[in-house]
Image (tube, rainbow, N blue to C red; front, side):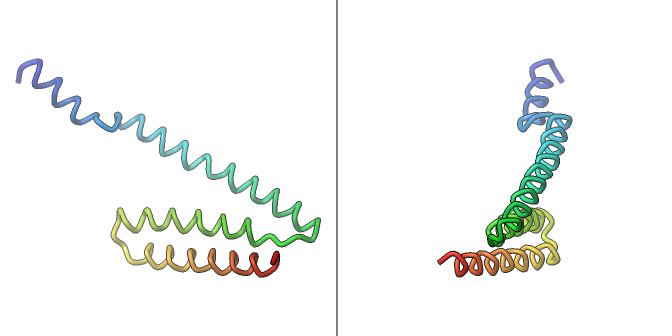
Length: 104
């Protein structure tokens, strides 16, 4: 292989970033989820203190988790993740509907 072929092959392999960068991005995304969870918990506590419904926050959390399972189901083709995604989306829909009934 000459230099140009090696460079072309390297560019193709690193088209979506190198492995280290992809790992950092994945770790960052996983870590950032904790920010959402912590702030959601804070909002739920404040809402409970004010005796307000918390189903809006629960719907957001359930749908976020369901989306993670859906992503995993698409990439692994495992039925357990499809089932988990469907169940969690149904829970999100249920608590969202309950929230809507409470505020209207």
